[in-house]
Amino acid sequence: MVKVGDFFPVECDCNLQDINGNIVRVSDILKFPAVIFFYPKDFTPGCTQEVCGFRDNYDAILSLGFNLYAINADSPGLHKRFVHFYKINYPVYSDKDKKLLKMVGILNEKKMFGRKYYGITRSTFVVDGNGIIRAIWGEIDGSMGKINTMTHANQVLDFLKTLK
Image 1 (cartoon, helix red, strand yellow):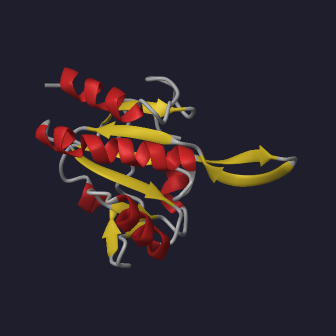
Image 2: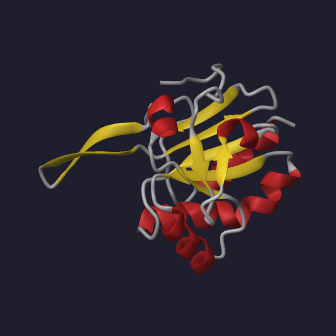
C-alpha cells in the first residue's frame, strides 16, 4: 500500500487500456503532475456523481498544471459507453488485470448482503511532477479524509490551488 510521500508505482508492468483498447503504461501518464482517481464501477450513482464532478472541474484542474485520469477495472467497451453518455472530457482507463489496483492497495475485500468479494476502494491521488504522492483521499490512507462523491472534485481542486 502506498502513502503520502511515496513514489506512485510507475515501475509496475501495468498496462492500462483507454476506451478504444489502446495500451497505456502508468509511466506514460505520469510524465506531468496528475490527479488520478479510482472508482468502483461505471453507471452507478455515486461513481457517476464523482466522475461528472471531475468533468465539470476538468478545465480548472488543467489550468493549475495537473492532468486528470480515472481508472477502474471495467472493460474499455463499458468505459466508452460511459464516457460518451456522460460527455467525460478526460481519459478513463481500464485496469482489467487489476495489477495497479493491487499495487496501490485499493483492491480490498468487501461485504455486501452477506457476500464477500474484492472491490475497488474509492481513492484519489495527487502526484507531483517528480512522481511523489502529495495527497490521498479515501479509506486507504486517510491523510485527506474520506470521499464524498458530491463534493470531492471541488475538494481536490481546492487542494491543488494551495500547491501553486
